[in-house]
Image 1 (cartoon, rainbow, N blue to C red):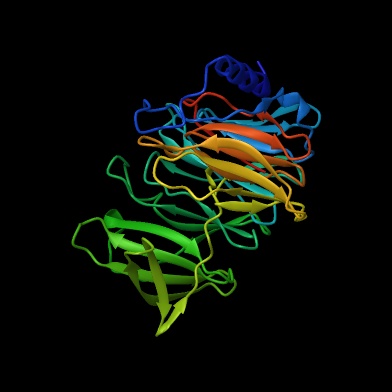
Image 2: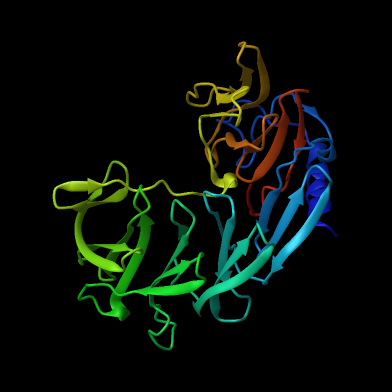
Length: 352
C-alpha cells in the first residue's frame, strides 16, 4: 500500500467522528475543538512542493501532491522514531536512528539534487545526539557519546561530515574528561564559521566545558560560557564577547510559530490570542485585509494548545497541526481543507 494511500485511509477513518466540544476543561485527553471546515480529498491539493516524510520505522518517502505519486527514497528499518533534519539550502536531508535488531545507530544523508543517499557514520546503538547542519549546508555535525552498553569507546566523539568533499572529520576535544565519562552536544554559530561543542562529564556535579571548532582551519579553541535558565540553553563566549548561536532547523512538522507569511507575502496565517481554555481561531488573511477562518482550537490539559501552524508549502497551501500528530492542508484560495494525516497515535515527521 502506498504511503499517501495509507495516510488518506487513516484520515478517512477519523472523518466520521463528531468534533469535540470547544471547552477543553472537561474534555477527555486527546479530544479537541476542530470547528467547521470544508473538507475535500487530499488529491485536490495540487501543490508543486514535495513533502519528505519519515515514519517511525525509518522509511523515507517523497510525497508529490501535484501528481499524487509517492516514492520510497530509503528504507533502513529503524527500531525507533528516527530523526529528520534538512539543510537550509534545501539540498540535503539527514536522517538517523537505531537499526531494528542491528545494535547500531546509523546516520544517513540524502541528496535531493542527485536523488542518492550515503551512510556517513555509524556507532553502537544509543549514545547519539540529533545531527545538525551548518547554516550554509556544507557540514553535518554528529555527536556520539559513549554508552555503557558499548563494548568499547572507539565509536565515541564529535564528527563533521563535509558534503563538499564527502569526508568525515573527527574533532579532538581539548578537555580532561575521559571519553567513557564525557557527554557532548553541538550547535553552530550564527555565522556558520564555528561549531560550538558542549562537554560535560556524566557525573551530576561535573562542570560544563565550552569548545569551539573552526572547520575551515581545523582550529580548536577553549571557550567560556554559562547556562541561561530563562532561555533554557547554554551561551558560548570568547572572552567577554558572546557568540550568537544559529537557530536549530527542525522539521516543518515540529514547528509551531504564532504567525507565518506565504513565501511571496500574499497571505499571512496567524493564531488569535490564546487565553486559558477559551476557543480561538487559526486565520488566514491577504494584503487587503480579507480574512478566512481555517479552524477553531482550544486548550487541552494533555496536549496544550490544539492548533499550531507548520508553514506554507507555497503561495497557496498552508499546513497546520491539530492535536499532537494530526496534520491538515488549507487552500487559501478555495477555503477548503484536506487531511494530510489523521492518526494521533502514529508518529509522523516531515519537511519540505
